[in-house]
Image (tube, rainbow, N blue to C red; front, side):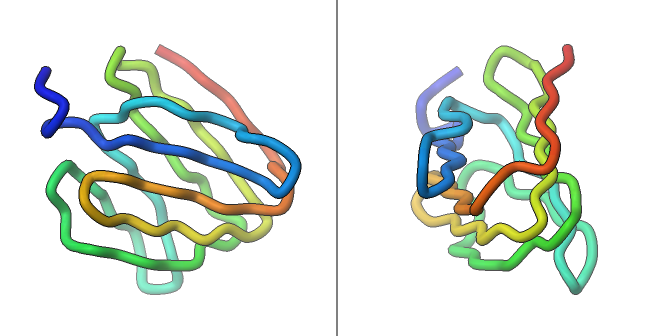
Length: 93
């Protein structure tokens, strides 16, 4: 897979990086509804509150995160998710 076909993703709290890696997609839900982010998506900024965020890693593993509140920003195939503390974190193939 080419680097341009991947999303460089970082999920962080003020204390630590919770997850960092390359992703093929990110799925989440904001106040407007469910959305997907794929490589080359338009610039995007949103708040996600109490909803699951699923990051599909380049290895095909789903990484699921649920935060009380998070800000997701996306630009130039780079996603950053900022939160205070994770509520729930899980990974599965």
